Image (cartoon, rainbow, N blue to C red; front, side, top):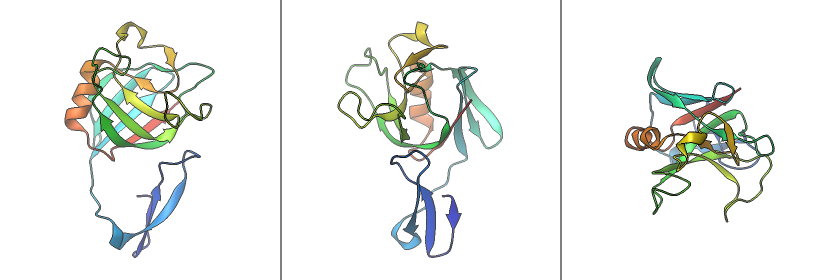
Length: 158
């Protein structure tokens, strides 16, 4: 939630352009809180999961190539998917993000939505190799899937 105006709440929207905000009726939703957040540093190729002010998990990431960059911004997890083939390109799990590629209007049959997901090529972590998604190890994405909820904030910096 961005702002609370009593009967109305301003929220980030999972639509284009990234960073879009809108107003919803407070009476139409049930609010939940989390002390967790994920921070991605595109330049250092790292992630940190925070519980309040304390880092509880850190690791390396792969980000988007020059032509299909991972855009900086504030996002949140919108869904969690367990791919049928854990040995596939998306690894053990994939969290959909509320943001979209600034370049790709569609990708693999979808709307060019960003994600944080595992990988079947762990040697590529630490480089710019994706179409905009953030790739992490299968161990790290499995930990996230077990510990982080839909709605968890994600900040992409750098």
